[in-house]
Amino acid sequence: MELGRRADYAIRAAVDLARHHESDERRKARAIAEEMDIPPSYVPQILAELVRAELAISVAGRDGGYRLARPVDQVSLVEVIRAVEGDLRSTVCPLRGGPCRWDDVCAVHVPWARAQHAMLDELAETTLAELVEIDTAIDAGTYEIPSDVARPPKGPGRRN
Image (cartoon, rainbow, N blue to C red):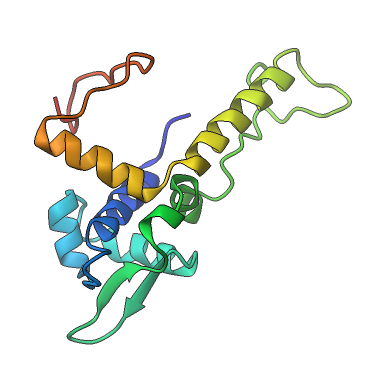
């Protein structure tokens, strides 16, 4: 599974809100865009979806802005992704390219579904608190990728 642009931006925005959650600081969309390298035109849309999903709170006015609706250890990564992407389970058969029907499932259907459930379970167990901790360590140059995790490819938009 690969995340789309909206999920990427939603995660970045949520991490920014999580970084500032303890201070009770409301974050302006413009500041989030600058800090998290998100195109400014996307941020209000993404934040509106986080607000609709009750993951963020919006306060209008000069002293307004956005903040998380719950503590950082109570917001999961899967919630943030679902807020902008909807249901993450694939409805496309990995072999046939169309929907599997239970009366005509492919040989890969069951293991594929198990793998999807395992991935969604892992994303549900990952909180914004954990993401902030990892992101802070990456910024400090102290994060070590676990040995059982493949290194991401180097390229544009990646911290190398």
